[in-house]
Image (cartoon, rainbow, N blue to C red; front, side, top):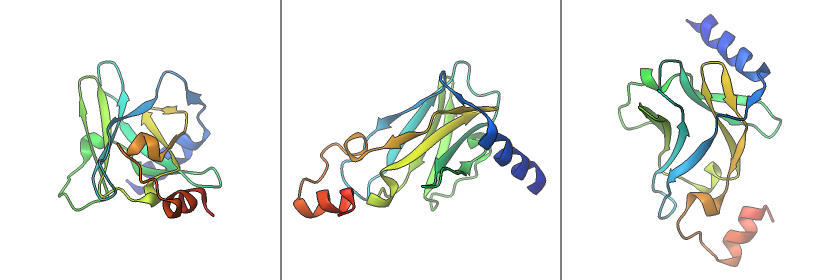
Length: 140
């Protein structure tokens, strides 16, 4: 099983991004500490592996899930997910500033979406507008 996981992670890293696969925010958080939902639309989902990854600053894809259909979720994990007929989702629990300004990708079979940055304005209904928060977000 471990060799299969390693094979999939290496294979995914070398596959060209698929322009037909993309994720979007479908449930914004009201504030930090709430949950956020990303969704990847796929026709006739999900006969293939439907997964999620996030990108490091040095451009490496870290696997969050290889296949959300095989999750045994007890509610205590940072990430959870699921599927429906039109695609699959990633739930980021207890969203923090550390979850933002990170690029995420969805994967379906051997297709990988282009990496897309999760921005504060996309994640929160009303992003905090204090000078301290803006400076922290910009890394100042």
